Length: 213
Image (cartoon, rainbow, N blue to C red; front, side):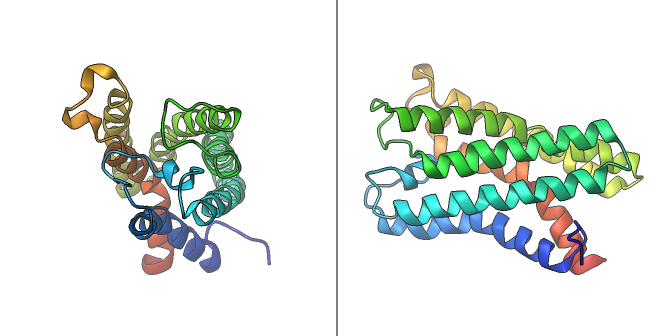
């Protein structure tokens, strides 16, 4: 049977994967002394200094591989609605899957930002490109949903897009010296919130296909 975005197994794995993206760091942080989830990004869990690096980096590779597969299914599903939006959605998901998933899992960032290596540069570039492309995923899904006359999904995705941008801006501001010792310095918190709202379309589709349809 050909895999599709409507299949039970795919949606179950999608839901588990997205929830695992947030639950796993909550578990692993207890085994990494000194790790602060409010001020430290999730990637630090995979740093050379981390005692749980192998687990977290393996997770990132799984995340990337699965979302890369998902990007193909989303492309096939959306092509009939709009070929242009289908291509843009594919790029949005697949760039994140490769950059913030697979490459970030294979090339670790260091705990300290001052310590720069080739691996950390690759990690940083991959994550930056990945986050920037996935940021527009909720907007693309919003447009596709409205074109398909799915008002609820379209509205949810639009709200998610606006909140993803808001928290992503907070996340970027947290890296600036001018905002040290302010609420914006909670880089880990803003990263998680921005990523959560980027993932909202995945969660909506998985939950809808598993429990509503």
